[in-house]
Amino acid sequence: MMVSRFSLLALSLALLQPLVAGLVVPRYFKPHPFTRRSLSVQKVQEELGAIVSSGSTIFGPEDPRFAEATERHSTHAVPIIEVVVVPAIESDVSVIVEYCNDNSIDFMAVNRAHARTYTVGAFDGLMIDLGQLLGIEMQPDEKSAWFQGGTYDGLVMDYLWERGFVATTGSCDCVGMMGPGLGGGHGRHEGLYGLISDNLLNLNVVLANGSAIRVNETSHADLFWGMKGAGHNFGIVTSFELKIHPREVDVWHYHNYIWTEDKLEQLFEEANKLHADGNTPVNMALNVATFVLNQSISETEVVIFWTFAYRGPAEEAEAILAPFNQIEAAYDESGDVPYPGISDIQGTSLDSANCALNHEWVMSTSGVKVYNVTATREVYQLYQQYLDRYPQLSNSYVAHEGYSNAAVRSFRAEDSAFPFREYNHLLAFGAEVPPGFRDNLTSIARKLADDVSALWNAGQPGVPPSNYVNYATGFEPLPSIYGYEPWRLERLVGLKNRYDPHNRFRFYNPIVQNNGS
Ligand SMILES: Cc1cc2nc3c(=O)[nH]c(=O)nc-3n(C[C@H](O)[C@H](O)[C@H](O)COP(=O)(O)OP(=O)(O)OC[C@H]3O[C@@H](n4cnc5c(N)ncnc54)[C@H](O)[C@@H]3O)c2cc1C
Ligand SMILES: *[C@@H]1O[C@H](CO)[C@@H](O)[C@H](O)[C@H]1NC(C)=O
Ligand SMILES: *[C@@H]1O[C@H](CO)[C@@H](O)[C@H](O)[C@H]1NC(C)=O
Ligand SMILES: *[C@@H]1O[C@H](CO)[C@@H](O)[C@H](O)[C@H]1NC(C)=O
Ligand SMILES: *[C@@H]1O[C@H](CO)[C@@H](O)[C@H](O)[C@H]1NC(C)=O
Ligand SMILES: *[C@@H]1O[C@H](CO)[C@@H](O)[C@H](O)[C@H]1NC(C)=O
Image 1 (spheres, rainbow, N blue to C red):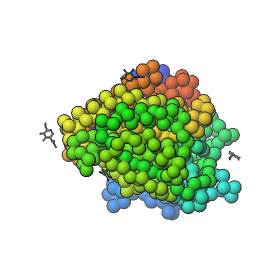
Image 2 (spheres, rainbow, N blue to C red):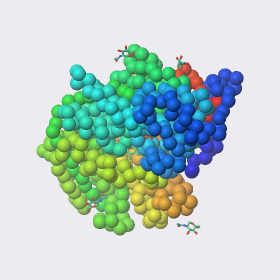
Image 3 (cartoon, rainbow, N blue to C red):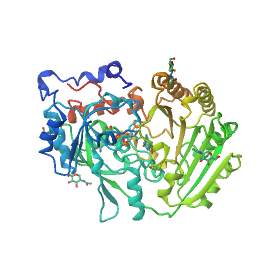
Image 4 (cartoon, rainbow, N blue to C red):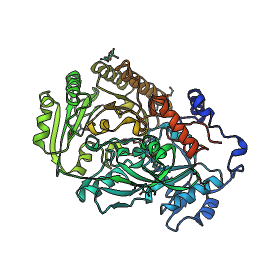
């Protein structure tokens, strides 16, 4: 495990003294003064197995199912899983949480295991695998649907499209709905409808003490505010009601290009014109520019792979792309496909490299308002230098995401815990450290990751750094994750006091970073 618990704790103490002060729970207040450290998998199977519903499964590391159940997108900071419990029905989740509390076992809900943050690496306990909670139920008025907590983007996109609808989801088929959704959730429909969290109507939540509650605009409204942007800190969503929208179009147009580096300045200037500071044509749903190596173009020189997805047919899309078509590409391909096919084209389908599991990813991020062309060139150069020097890092990326985001900006920032609506672009860095190079290259990759985000942040002097909670590593200052207005963190800490006073939910970019006891 690369992230030591001690370093995380030290970091949190340094950052959070004033916030945590009110939350330290005196020993005599601890709900369960005893602990059963020697609890075996077999004991959990016997005791918990007797009280959860019959379709649930419980297994430990010895079980053949364990390896697959605990696979993760990134192996950089992995939670220690002592036992996996797969609830069959929603009410099992309460039973599991109560059992954990009675036995002083830490628990963690896993949706699709694509968490990027390193803070999950501080976990040691029981994993609640939501993989059996996959139900989807459209409501009779066709304005919303209920989804269970284990649903994920590809499943939801396919299910709704076939029935003539779409919803706000993330863009990667493999990623969960609630993993992203509790922190906002960016996706190809955000220009029209906003984030996943902006479209939530109801949440069925199991709190830290095992109580199951309904959270919405009128029921636990304070928590509803917090769960729309900082939700990983407060409970386990067993199901949620989300708005759905008629799909309106039959095809999406795509155009993928590869450009050589000499076009970088021209391209990013055009991109800034296209996005016009948050005024992207609303159907130009998502374009992503990635610095990568592509052996068929060059063995050593990083190229710019740029993929555009447009909600509608070629004619409309290509009119908008005309300036890009004038910049000579080394390669390009385009076409029209039904919406679920767009994932394949943009490299976000279940079998894409992006969705591959069990690689060591060293990551960083930054949100920016516009692309700073100078800073973008500096990042390119630094990245190229590292790849020249450490060719083993060649399966890495620098990604520049350009969503059309009019609707995201139209929601009032104070109405939810999602703090950064004015940052138009998410920038993401990932270095893959190949097996066998962990000891040699991880710290080098880490330095590169930090330097890249520092260049991004230096590219917008006067603009406070933002780190989208779902892209953050957890080492960034808390205000850069949860918002700079002091009332935001105060309000979130207040919610923690009320709904999770023992800090059971502290493994995903925690607002409060003490160890809960
Ligand atoms: C390949 C890839 C693509 C991505 N694409 C996007 C994207 O398009 N848009 C975007 O916004 N983000 C995206 N992200 C970031 C993504 O939002 C986070 O990594 C997110 O945590 C992944 O969710 P998950 O369900 O797959 O992961 P998990 O690791 O299963 O979940 C992350 C955390 O969420 C919490 N959690 C999960 N389910 C529940 C639940 N039902 N109730 C309560 N808490 C829960 C748990 O604390 C858990 O540790 C992407 C990440 C990767 C690696
Ligand atoms: C909010 O939850 C309450 C309590 O369950 C319920 O009565 C109400 O109908 C819900 N509101 C919405 C909009 O669903
Ligand atoms: C590399 O470029 C070729 C075109 O030269 C393209 O067909 C291929 O899809 C690219 N590979 C990746 C991984 O993008
Ligand atoms: C890692 O570094 C050590 C010490 O410098 C070296 O002996 C070893 O060969 C390296 N391993 C790899 C896989 O590069
Ligand atoms: C762009 O980035 C450079 C390098 O960090 C910086 O000097 C410059 O001020 C930035 N430009 C703008 C307009 O912010
Ligand atoms: C569980 O926690 C909630 C929120 O703190 C509280 O309202 C409720 O009474 C608690 N339930 C039990 C059974 O203690």
